[in-house]
Length: 160
Image (cartoon, rainbow, N blue to C red; front, side, top):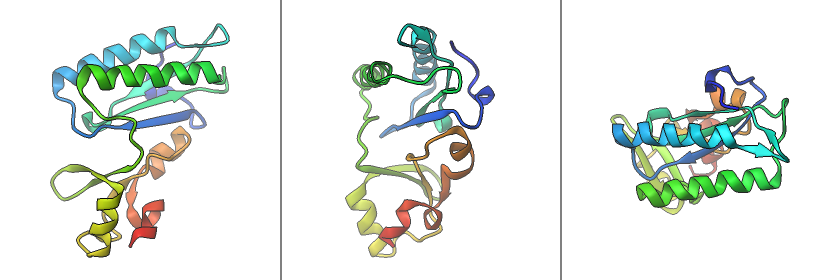
């Protein structure tokens, strides 16, 4: 069951898929529609899942699931992964590679391999106050408060 993302409770589970590039406006509308269509048929053990989608900065796909209504099962999580993989193929995106870091400089959002991020930090080309996207947050409350933070407040701090 599709509900607006901002109406999900704070304890809703989230999955964040950072893109290696921004979506153009046509892609963003299409990805939004396809994700909403996926959510309307998303189930666990035959029970509809109450979920929503957010596309912040036209750069991330965030799925939120109200697990107080129905928890995700292994099969339903697999279905969401297969759906995200289908978006990767259709739009020539990289959404599943967890060995990348997404961060903000003064003018744009950048997506770089973790190894390169570490090098930039060691060379002091990035500082602890660089804004990073902590895609490891677990629920909507953390997404709202701990997702977009200075590196000093995230697991990224270990590289400085």
